Length: 162
Image (cartoon, rainbow, N blue to C red):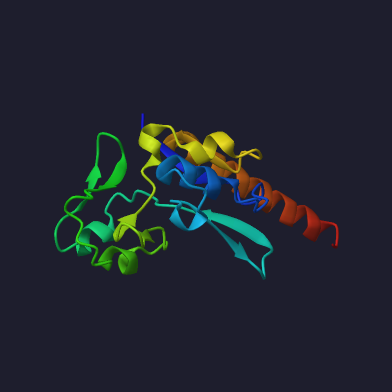
């Protein structure tokens, strides 16, 4: 069964520990700029949003790669970059609608979440469980339940004149 990473924005505190453990795991150094996950703060909403590769079914990054260094591995349910083929043109950075692809200035190559080969380090260290790696079907149910709870709260506030 396919698993995906999900985020519960209400739980994210913006501690950025996920960035630190990712960079240490992948690069051997505590350098958030080289992490595959980045926490973005939405000032107006007052929320933190961990951003990472969504491993799209039809990845735009792969479509624009001139050397075909990016492909979706259906067996693992993830998008991979062949670092040997990557020429560092950065076309994929522009194509990603989520801004989830990074650039390693030292190696002159793109970097992206690879789900730690099925055992994401950021998930293990997320103390609030804002980031989870769960079965895709369960993720859909969780989202439906959360939407229903938000609707219920909104209707309750409206009926109480709040």
